[in-house]
Image (tube, rainbow, N blue to C red; front, side):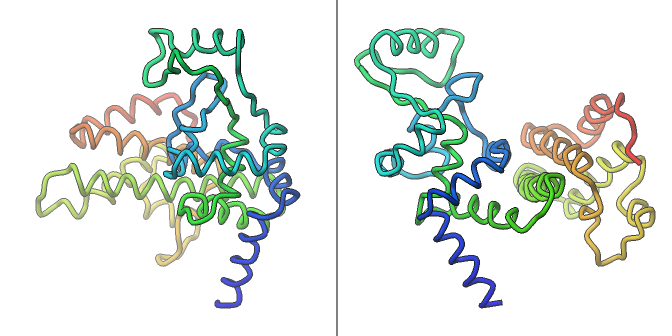
Length: 265
């Protein structure tokens, strides 16, 4: 185990130091998994980001991100980074500062503004050190490195994202559902409810159908599309539980949402 840990640490360090390895990762990985791990507020619909937003994502200082960009400028320019000035900046300000755009703005006295892409967000995560979120991103990439096919990579990403969403659902249940003697059954009840709506079977029925033993993980038997449906459903449950919706109301909402899907076999 210690040998494996040392190998992974060495690979992670190599990723922070090697432009070649970073380019391979950026070019072979769909960066969409980043906003499933943590919500991203983009400046525009085409997923443009500011330095501040990247710093917020990784929970580090703006200066930390600026230093990374300065030291690896050519990489970020290849990813589509651009510094806006003059007329380009005035036009961009008019879009960002429009009344219909909430939560972001560019000050009138700013005379240059750097915009970056989602690829840049991923690249920062490969370079940042002493950052828990960046380390998590690198570990995902290193795990994917060992996987041969595109389909397997997509499955691995979806599986990891599903684990994160499941933890969020557990947290919401713990935090927002009132204490009672039946509260401990809330998570399995919501899980079985979701399974029945999507697959027409509860966890026990699915394990029997898929020949999974009691101690085996049922979710390892799901394909990428099935995992995506489950993750989506658990995201909805998390949000509605936090808003105070009852079990029956959440069930009705999910039944309506998934009423038209073709049951997966």
